[in-house]
Image 1 (cartoon, rainbow, N blue to C red):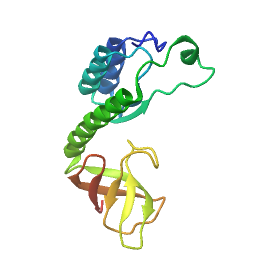
Image 2 (image 1 turned 45 degrees about the horizontal axis):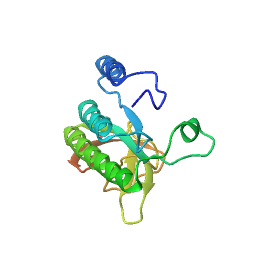
Image 3 (image 1 turned 30 degrees about the vertical axis):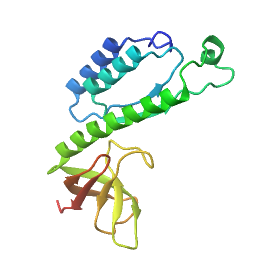
Length: 173
């Protein structure tokens, strides 16, 4: 499948690079985006993709459904042959798989202290912050039950985990 999408590395090559990165930096956060329903994607290819994601356990994963873009080599070279229903099913399956991975990773953060950047605060007295792992407005949040100053960094102890977000309390250094 990777060859059809004109990727230079095989799954084994990608895994090898990720293993090297993680071995050199235990705090690294690995993110990627996946397209489901690329022309020619078979059930076998999709299962291999699920197995790969299960093995790698990406820290952040975006999933998108293939849609033909006029003028691209994929649109010119391949027939859009994966039905929309199958694309949606595969999308849903990968999102559920990543939710489980995220929850397990977030549970491991419980008890840890993280430096976070506050993006949002509310008049109700809570704030949303992000860790070094997270891009603004698209990734997970650290929710804090204090109204904190936007744009400031705080040390937060994580005490509860959910599929995408964690809950923490500000601590003094």
